[in-house]
Length: 329
Image (cartoon, rainbow, N blue to C red; front, top):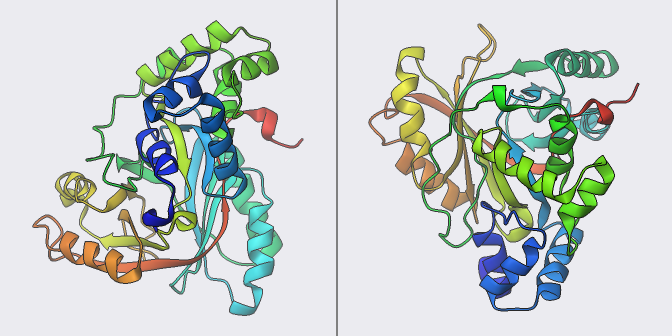
């Protein structure tokens, strides 16, 4: 629960999920805004990372721009869950993996430097588990910012910026991989990254700003773990909606208070008809369901059949695989 989080920690988590300072000593800026010493801010963030309350301080990238990704689902027999989840989790580029309440019970996100890598990972999982894997790539995002207010601080989801891939330069993949893996939580994190990449601190800071301005980095800041912070009800809601209604329904659902993600994905004919997805997080199951009840009354989706898939277990949650340096030969 948020009332069990120290007020300083809550401020750090709620105020810095976006717009992380692009200066040589970013934690000094956070410290001034929080009215506590820089070393205290660094220590608190290090502790929250070590205890699993945050995954990292770093970047999320616009989907399928500098890398490829897909959402995948499997129907796994109950007595094989541990084994299959283990096989999935060790594949390069699996960055989210959840057990959900549905006959398709194991859901995960596969990422990689290109679509061929993602396809190989899915094929490897099929081969090693002897189970079908449903491939559900994203078609259109409505809110993929991933910012999550713990105390009402983030407001409405931001309007997605146009992604200008022509702004990419040589070396950006490795820089983005470092940023999505997470900044080192030290006094001069950009200097450490620059030294690792053989670049200058000034160059790294300038390049991050340009990638943010180009929309390639969709968010830069503290990435929280909702469940570890008391928001234990994680529901993915899937909507069986006609394609010509998506343009109106997606933005309406994305803007609804309590909806934390919203996007269109490719359905699988005769197998999985759902094309509109949203995420709802709540402190309790009843709170999440109340958000869904209100969302389902929106005129754009009021008559749309939907299913609710609560997660019961998180197997993995990390940054995406972007650079080929992270792919085993």
